Length: 362
Image (cartoon, rainbow, N blue to C red):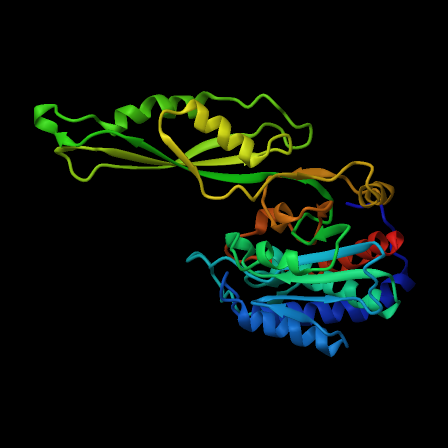
C-alpha cells in the first residue's frame, strides 16, 4: 500500500472523475470486446472522448487523442491501456457481460484486465486537459491479449513523438519498472517415414530427444536483479500419423520468457545454434523492457512510497521504444479468471495516485 495520505478535500475534488470512470467501465463491460472484435467498445471510447470535447483519432479499433495545445517540441507523456478482453471461460458463475456491483466489487469481463486502468487513465487525461497540463496522449489499444498486428504494433508508429509512457495494466498501483518479454519458437525435428514393423525409416521423435534434453537443462547465464533468469519451456509436441508408421517429423513449441538482459533475436540465435532441429521464431518483437531507476517517473514513484517490481506478464509495453512503466488498479492474479472483478476502492485509489504521479511531472 502506498504511503500517500488523501485529504478529505482532495477526495471530494476527484468524485466526478470517479463517477465517470465507474460509469464508463460498466458500459464497456456490457459491450463484448473479445480481441479483434472490439469495434463496439472502441465506439464507446471514441464517443466518450468526444463528449469531453476532444477530437479523437481512430485506426481500426485503436482510439487516441492529444491534449489541447499539443506542442510536439515539448516532452510528451503517453497514457495507454487496452480495450480488448480474453474470451470468458466456462467456469463463470455470472454473466460476464453484465456489470454487477456487490459491496466494493464491480464484476464483469475486462473489469480488472484492464478496464480499470483504461477508465482511470482516461479521467487523468481529462483532468490534464481541464488544467492545461502539458503534452499528454491518451491511447486505447486493441488486440493486446493476442499481440495482434492491428493493435499497438500498428498504431504506435502513428502517434506524435513520445518521451515516456504509463501502461495501465493491473499492478495494485505499484510500478512495474521491468517486464518479461515473450519469444515463441516452432522447433521441427526431421526424420524419414517407414514401416514400424520392419524397423525402417528414421524416427523424428528420437532425433528430437537430444534437443528436448538440451531445452530442459539449458540455463541462461545473465540473471536480472529485477526479473531473474530467462526461462524456457517446451509446451507442445506433435508427431506421428498412426501407430505403425515411423514419424518423419516431430514438431515442438517452446515458450521463452526473456529478461531485459537478452533480446529475443539473441535468444533465438542461441537456441538455433544449439539444436539439430529447425528453429523458427513466431515473432521477435515482444522484447523485455526496463526503465532506468533514475528516470523521473521512477523517482517520483519512490518519493510517493511506491515499490518498484518486475512483472512476469506481457503487455503492449513490450512494443514501446520509449521509457515506460506498467501501473494500474486491480490485481494481475485476477486477470483471465472466472468472475473477474475490480474493487471500486481500487479505482478511487488509482485516480489519486495517478494524480500525484502525473501532475508532479508536468
